[in-house]
Amino acid sequence: MSHDERGHEKEPIILTSGRRMAKGLAIVAITLAVGAAIAVPFFHDFYKNPPPVTQIRKPTTAPSAQPAAEAGTTTISILQGASAQGNPDFSSDDKPQVPLGNKIVWQNQDTIPHTATSGSDPKDPQMGKMFDTCIISGGEKSKAIELKDVKEGDSINYFCSIHPYMTSKITITAKEQGGAAGGTSGGTAAAGVTLSILEGASVQGSPAFDPDPLKAKVGDTIHVVNKDTIPHTVTSGSNNKPDGNFDTSVILAGKSAEIKLDKVKAGEVDYFCSIHPYMTGKITVE
Image 1 (cartoon, rainbow, N blue to C red):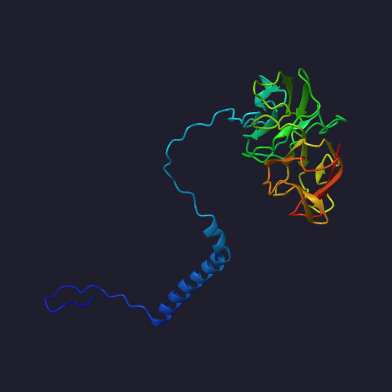
Image 2: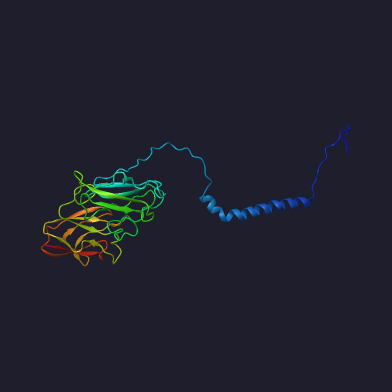
């Protein structure tokens, strides 16, 4: 042990060799390289899915069990947890009543898809013939379903085609005061007859209008409903050439318009969609 000039022991100084230093740096470099080889390929996932954090949220008002419905529409809820067999499934189970002329909308409050399909079960030969919402994703609602050829007192069974143990029924009751006689949401149906632009009508070769041909009288008002998901028109004429008798202008998806047959003569009247000219139909005017 060495001593300083006053006789105190000196602290030992530990030195390392260049070889040891190189080894240490090599280990650090290898460790970083391995980490990079693991992290780089998954960097996008790390960035896209960051680790969960705690977030303070303001309290919100709990949603009501039954969503508000538009005039002329009855809303039925598919309840949260409905897919668990034995749980309550449809909000209409305690009071399954739909006024005559009302449309029906099913609101899926569950987190997984469901349907509302007419019939008692998948083996019912009448399954889906009266109505079928198709798949309603969690948190979404169905299109408005219009019940045809029903009368007060009728009872209609339906179920979920994905979970057939989810069953319910609706009973047709007296028409609401001021409701829509023809089942038109939000008001009284226009006088005359109704012409529907069918869902999928823009796909060339698909049925476009219902009924086709439509029967009417000179001077009638025709209520046109666009049941498709894109805009259309109903324009009198043929071969993409309007003749000026009537034109609804553009009808947006889910909306309606009216045409009046006050300029036509008795006989067959051709019409088409000016946006999709291959969509054509006829009106037989008496």
